[in-house]
Amino acid sequence: MSYKTIILEKEDGVATITLNRPASFNALDFEMGKELVDAIEKCTKNVRIKVLIITGAGKAFCPGGDLKAMKEWPSDNLGDFFRQLIKLLDRMILDIRLMPKPVIASVNGPAAGAGFSLALACDLRIASDKAIIKQAFTSIALVPAGGWAFYLPKLVGLGKASELIFLDKVLTAGEAEKMGLVNQVVPEAKLREVTLEIAKRLARGPSLAFARAKALLNRALTSSLESQLENERQGIALSGETEDFREALSAFFEKRKPKFQGK
Image (cartoon, rainbow, N blue to C red; front, side):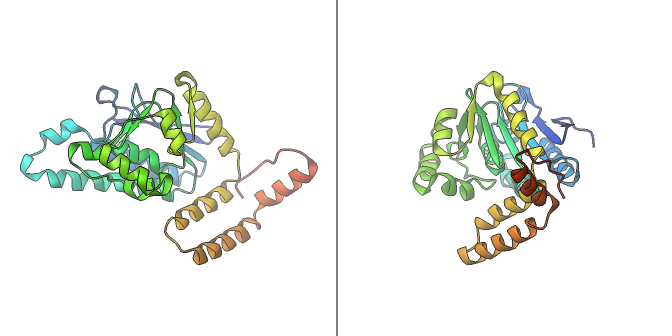
């Protein structure tokens, strides 16, 4: 499948999906939604890809759904517009969470609405110091979608999540970092370099352990402590049988860096 609204690049075990509608600040429309679903699925299936980066072209990460597309939709059937678009967004969110590989959001500029939700679904968020983050849905009389209301209370607490819903404050990258919404803020000119450095480090890591650990985090969001403890017990037992763990153990005692093979 050739893409018109995104760019998919692969190098040294790292895939990068760039949202590529800079004229509309990478707003999400149906074509981009379908292409993102396809590209994320390809990255999941490709065993040579160990890490995925998602970023935006130009000055923005993603401001959410394409308001122009909404305006052009028949006004008496806008509910159908959102049902169809959110179906694509939800598929992206689930596929990112279920992908057994680390996914990094490289937030190069404004992330709002569905763009905020897309970033939240990623495992790590590295932001430019020029980035801003905004809930945005309620300011246009919508409700958060794409798992926003699922993740936010867990990340920042119910009080702060409520504040963002009702007051819809624009957050600077620094404010988002203090709240735990982004993991690291870097100068705009260094964003790509720092993101790739982290991605390459992860690509050299124990991919099976990462996959199992991510699955544990996913289960922890919804499971009880008892079932979570059992899931962790099974996961660490399986990981202890891998070649990567034996290599890590040997490397520790030999005082060298481990060379992981994903086995």
